[in-house]
Length: 323
Image (cartoon, one colour):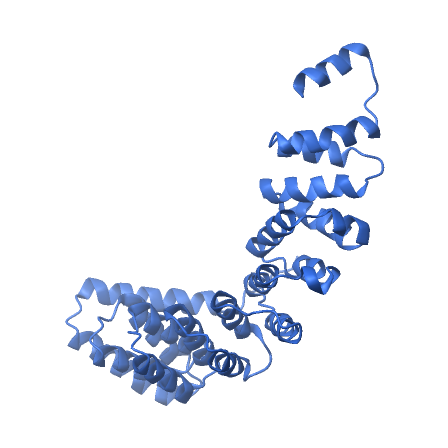
């Protein structure tokens, strides 16, 4: 390719659209993604094949801005969509999911005919919703309902992605609805499923359901880990629910799992931010008693307090100063 371009320059031949269109797929096959994107970008008018090259090269090179632009161009034209093979679609959706670009992911999926909307593409779009900031839980739930309407199989990995995205849903019972659907579909929960669901329920302050889920874990012979409890305690801290945080600390101790510094710090954070100041102060004393019972060194205590203070500072609204 380099030799061809050198000869073109020596011959004084103008680089026009026809030449760039011919070069783009050759550059793509040679894995010269940056050069391929440059060729496609230099075209005055792009064909469906050119856009396909742009999508594939941008996805492979992780060029988020160009991937978004070429996906939008492809989604707007039916003929261009037809040129995107399954591999190109998967690569594009994978790139959008990693970036958390839920808008581009949704538009790509929505533009495809139903028979081309595979479980893997749905999974990518739902993952993008969960990685978006803020989380787009409502959009993820909409995609799930569409999967069910189209009789698309929802694998456990996608349910886990949905459980994560449901934390951003304005529908309070989204997590419960997903857990019930998993049960109906015979999809077994794994540790990841439980961890994400526990975090979501704890954030919403639905402590009785948190405890029920922990009991369900035990019934399913799935042992909770430190991450399981840490996730739930952190969720309780974000909800300023000191009752949930302290009770979870006790539950973790009762199953014989050691309490780490982040768990203590999250529990203290929940106590210090609890709207019920008196109850929060009382439970903070319980956390300090638990620290003493665990024979935590002074250095570790200082670290716990430092972590709690840092978490509280991060959650304070930033002040803006205008000149």
